[in-house]
Length: 369
Image (cartoon, rainbow, N blue to C red; front, side, top):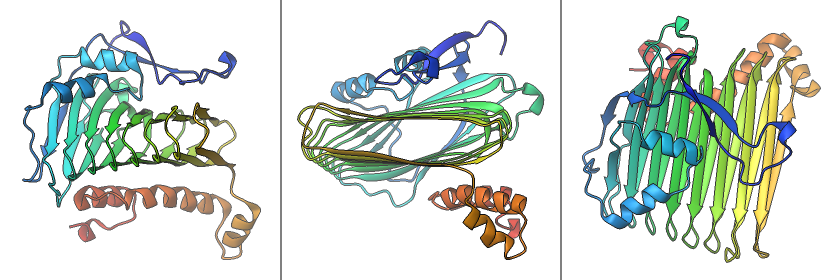
């Protein structure tokens, strides 16, 4: 990419705060257009990748709120990239996950778009993996992959989404999710950043249907000069809806992280509950850690809460390791690696999970086969 990239304002906070905090939004550099990303798609036989959607489905998907914001949604929609549609028919239960692998390439902006439809009482799992294994370190973060995923979950259906960014220090990933949930529907999201120049995650979920549920689990590890940015929005429209947001990560020297977590109780969402929790381990003097918990409420009969644990390892934890002959640096590395390993273990695709565990030194290559 060249210096003629434009600046795009993304991840707007639904309720702006003081400008000097610099958390109301974020900025990224993108070209006017991105080319279609190199991708491998493996669908189980039960799922369809046809484009047969009715007008109502299309309108719902297009108009769904974007986690990275309307500017990003408009930009990626204008790229010459046709969306891939993955559909689970009514009552269908996919036994194996659909797996999408996206590959960053040197000095190029790549993008992909996906539409996921879970018909009434169906269930599907989608694993999406961004790899930077073929990107030269000399690209200096100019290689980017943008991923737009729009999800419609009808009454009683369930979608499990896993998104892993593994681009390395030379790649930036911009991962956006827009979701609409029907009655008694469920959306669970697992997002993992293995360490990248930039990793931006955005999720906006509209819990329209009564008793719909959203859960987001995020794990990240950011090293020197790397940046992680998250913007999660749960809009509670239906009664007795539930949202849970969990963020767990590690920041090393000169890394930066911003977390915006918004739970919005719309009038009429009586009985709704929302909870967000964050646990961030700081392993350096010059890390930048920003957290913006936001609870918006126009309905009285609701419950919303936020909790955060941010800091170094406790003296008790360090004493435990020291008493067993483990020095502080090793203790830090063990705890940091353990957090990411715990998230990777949840990946439902055995091939990808084992690949990552081998890369992390947690599994011998011969044991992964």
